[in-house]
Image (cartoon, rainbow, N blue to C red; front, side, top):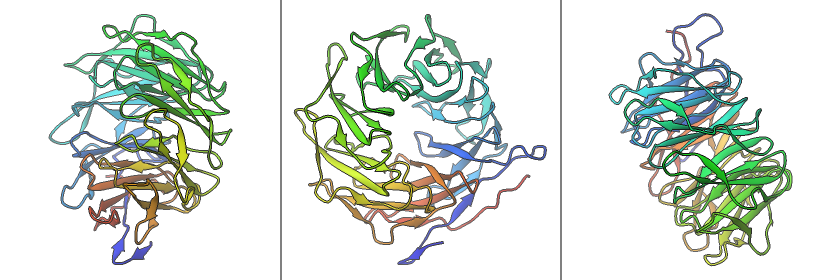
Length: 411
């Protein structure tokens, strides 16, 4: 554990529920999310085929296992999403070709399977996206190269396939990104270097391909990130070591490459993160141990490197999280088992290391989440089967470890 200026990062080990040997141990946590009210945290466990659920202690950020946790999922649950009102939880199961759906108990945080769950998806579902009104839900299927679309029942949370679903995508689609207007959806196809764009039917949720879709991207196109106003779109090209930038036509949804695109990054860039004001963009470079930073031109969407970029991270940075106020950025480093913390300069977008950074996590930190209030940060550690829980110092951005450590065990 790293200790600096009386800041101690304590790892909270994932609790396991009663199960036969080899099951229910919270193995290989792959994804973590926090409910919209910041009361509960949920972790999809890739190897033990379940979901761990925790109550978040509001004064400290410590995690306490929800009664009944972990909750059974399908085979190899890989992602997790909570609806905007904190009533339902959805988990794609990569090897089952299904989507597990649960009702979230608002008092306890416990999960109860919905009628009809699990719901059939395409082959190898890897992500799940809900629209802003919680009317429709989309799953990217990497094996069948398509998008499963569902209508969501507002009362029960149950899912009904949209007419025409699944909708064709390119090879190896990663994640459906929905435009802030809710009129368009985009998905990067990692294996054929394109961005597939769709118009969303507001009544049914159906997807109609946009004219000239797919739009060209770079090698190994990852996921699509839209700026908060929906004027620009950015795609990390993982094998091309670059970011493609586009203007979004507000009427048609079509993407047009901005001048100078693609913009160079370090080696194997992560998904693009845009600050809440839409002024700066960042990517973590997995093989370069760095973070690339740019200023976004408000008229064209073009990217200009921030002075000092790239900024040093640790070994194998996997993503970058920005707090809701746009003051701080956090980077889990998978191979050095820690989290780099930065203060974002409001004027320039430059990243300045927070005192005490990096902060110790578990082994192979691979996914992170910030609570909506910006008071707490959570990191799922793929190698040590646990979750690191931190308080965030509101003034400095430093990560302050919780005061207890809970050992993974059957109970």
